[in-house]
Length: 124
Image 1 (tube, one colour):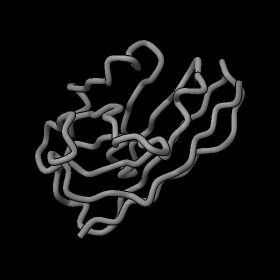
Image 2 (tube, helix red, strand yellow; image 1 turned 120 degrees about the vertical axis):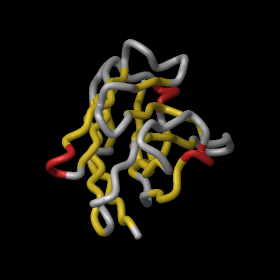
Image 3 (cartoon, one colour; image 1 turned 90 degrees about the vertical axis):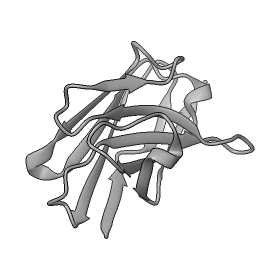
Image 4 (cartoon, one colour; image 1 turned 180 degrees about the vertical axis):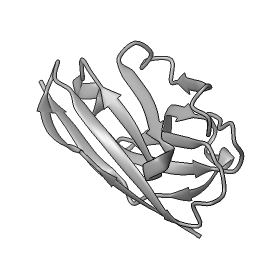
């Protein structure tokens, strides 16, 4: 079992920045990719970003490239999501997740454990 705790969400004005963190505990001796997803009210869950165990491979949702950056600190079992130039349409609950493999993916089925989520609200 792996437990995930997200933090860093909040209210920010359009154009602002936030940095989300997600720390894993429990069975962290297993190497895994990490990902971020988000879900806005009334919408389906959307892929945000993933990063491989090594940190050498990562990918982002199409509308997020250039604004969001994913990184990780394996020594602290923590993954980060730096979000810049935020827009009102970025408003959602953001979830981090543990990948089933070393490499990650953009599909929710690629992930086995999920955090409780952190709310991000971007005002116009």
